[in-house]
Length: 279
Image (cartoon, rainbow, N blue to C red; front, side, top):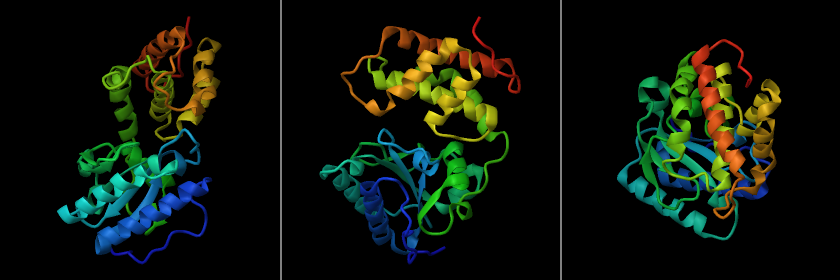
């Protein structure tokens, strides 16, 4: 499928003009580098869900006709190393992968490594980060085409039950997995844990995906007010972003561990029962 002549939509893909300019440059660069192997470039993640803000990274997915060649990989690495070195804000907040089209057409392609640029990094990796059922669901249901055919044309639907089972596996170990690479001494990590647990719980219950902020609001509506200060803090301080010197209140750290245990208990009790409230 060759759509190299596709153009960026005239509408603004995000509310931030600087980010729109960065995305336009991304599309131009990858189309030049990939040439006839370019299929499309898409927004997924929070901006595709209509909830991107100044604390969000901007998640993209470039679909290629084949796995990128060594020459293409070298040029993509050069581009993604140079882009965040410039002055600006949004050029340092892209995250995404280069996905072969065939991998998106079947669940057998899940968790294969794709060429990936992590948020804030200048060095690309081969990583499965974007090759998940969650990303596929967002891409198919809400993906924004920056160039190429509609997102629904490049990724198959995620079958019912797949997202629920993924969350059932991941929620119980989420906090320990998170703390393998960061510490709750950093307030951002504590807030991120609360947001992420809410989002995974929402996905478990609904088999859909929403933004972290909207999932926290969903949890507030469902839960006893015992949890409301912890959840509201995650919303109120979200735009503070990542500051390695900012420390969370100790009671929020303790409650984050408790919240992870609580949601784990909910999903183990019954996948269809309404959530319990604390005694």
